[in-house]
Image 1 (cartoon, one colour):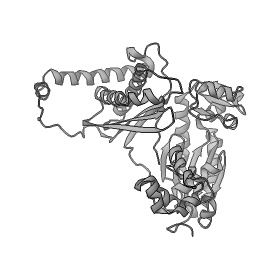
Image 2 (image 1 turned 45 degrees about the vertical axis):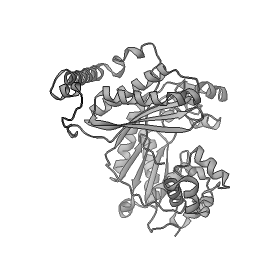
Image 3 (image 1 turned 30 degrees about the vertical axis):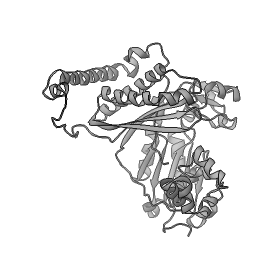
Image 4 (image 1 turned 90 degrees about the horizontal axis):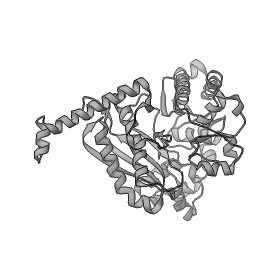
Length: 419
């Protein structure tokens, strides 16, 4: 066997094909078989017909339409995508209780304990694909393998609308000829470094050796890539894990953005995420700003709050401070994506209480229940009032004055990362 540990190919990675675009084609028969772009300014998703023409997700809409002039552009309908996702996940959980969701359109399923009841993992995967198509009307690709990593790679190779089983005794034959970009964690920067060393395939990564990878990429990335290239992935499917972060991001295209425009976009993201915290009865401690510059390099900047909170104001203050610190780099290199994550989540009522160690009179007044404490209570009351209005009349019923007359854009949920 090629791997470091025994086991059968019992892990499924199920991934809906071109999810947003497929929902649009399902709901509008006139779009079927045609190139579809979801989102106008920036392509949020595109059908495989558009992909074959060269369009890619996050591409500038004008560029995408120049590449594929026959494309049909449709606005995003997040409510429809959410409903379709819930229907698909209901089928996942009806298939096996061991479901680990990765995003709105993909999940790992462990089916090793079902052989005597319903058949082989390949049989289960085939039935799952049939049910999703028949009951939800969407195509889905499934990869089956011994490890999570191999199952995810298998589904990527099998797309679109396919099924691929990687037998344990054929893992090396399957994985090693693939390009290094198939490894989790190999983005454009890492790929350039590896290509510069003459490393182009997964087999080259395995041959290069762990120490050489560590010297080239650093300890974390080096050990990680060596483990994947040598079939070491001990992670199990873990259902019901409470998410430790939530996030949202917005693709911005290639045009220059002013500081005021970015501040407005960020404020809208903060409003949505803080509302999601309160709706879920959660608090956060850490605010993480995610940026992709004009040269497509990515950075993250974080700030940990003194106390956990679900209030909008302190989250907004932290996010704006992080953005202000990044503005010199944005001015020099441009920006194509702006995102925010709230991490170190916990349940409300479980915040660590602050001790009365304030150094200035204002903080002492706040601790004593004076004007500063009243400001905090006012802020929380405002959040509750706005949440109530939005719950009754819709999320767009009330917003900040700075957002009036501006394109609100579409902010897409940040998906859990495996890099």
